Length: 119
Image 1 (cartoon, rainbow, N blue to C red):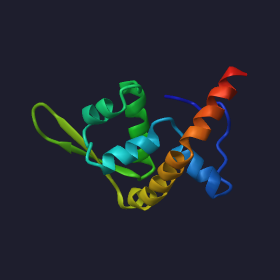
Image 2: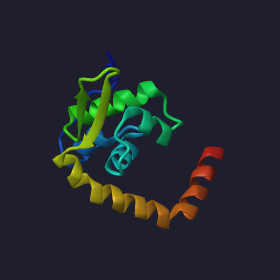
Image 3: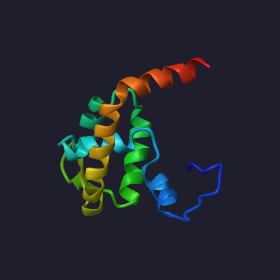
């Protein structure tokens, strides 16, 4: 099991949101699950740059934090789907606002990101 290198601090809301949402794919996973990509294979197609192992780990963390629910269907072959929980639903307007901000500022930010990488 993964053990964090730095101690967890949960002193304020920003610490907590960092613990819950930091992870390269978590916000996208929530977005795509809300838009109807419920199965792990659907999510993998939507986020092809992510390895299946990392997606699974981040889905597991989102489930552990109560933002998504995992539904297992007793079928052959087995089928699993993820759904946004009630708590996860409360994050969707914030995710949408972040996406809009990123869209609005993407040209400027893309330029700054590329410049920072070159340094």
